[in-house]
Length: 199
Image (tube, rainbow, N blue to C red):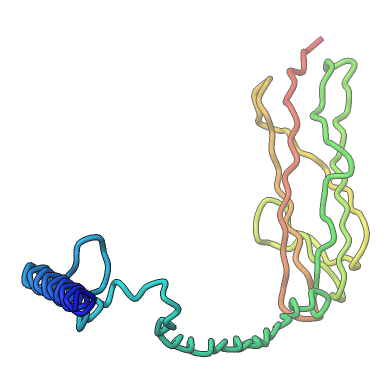
């Protein structure tokens, strides 16, 4: 009889303890659905953040494939340069004066009436190509004479009427004859006039 009574008392204590645990659990969930100490109660649902580190595979976003880079091939433009060669006009197609110059410088007469010193004539020389002949004029357009395409000629140098110390000047004009358009060149010769003393 005593053993039966003891078993009944023990069973009642177990039931009472279970009831107290159930009530405590209900009170804990009423405060926010979480149990103190971070545990999980019966019927509780774990929060999403609490699943981390529990072996659950985390969803990885799929990598977006990068667009394939397209490289544009540069286009090479070929430039063709045209060179035009201009030929100078031929100078030998007509008359050409190579030179026309004073070969001998003139001098005016000097000295005295008893011992006079004659003046020195002027000599000019020339060379012309592409022409048949040349003409030479002295101190004006009138032609003095016609000469070969190359040569020299002596001309008396007049100093008459010039005052002592005055510079006397004479001009000589050469022109081509034949072979094409006429070419011409003019040169000058000078000399100083001297006083002729009477004795």
